[in-house]
Length: 73
Image (cartoon, rainbow, N blue to C red):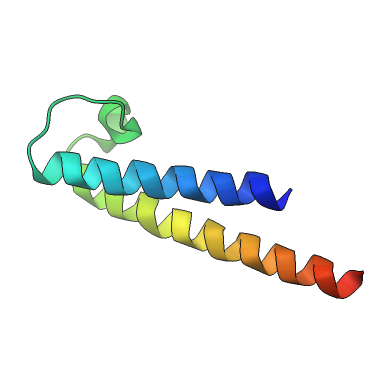
């Protein structure tokens, strides 16, 4: 379970960082999720930063899950 949550956090961070670089360098449409959701148009950079933060929070949560399972054993 920890690996899935950690992978999800990594996915969010990659989407955020890659999208942020793409939008700051005026890159074209690419595989970044923010480019394909109409509700995010006009807020791309803000959404990229939110993706980075959410990915970091998910990553930290996966560490917390790891620590709690070790104490139970």
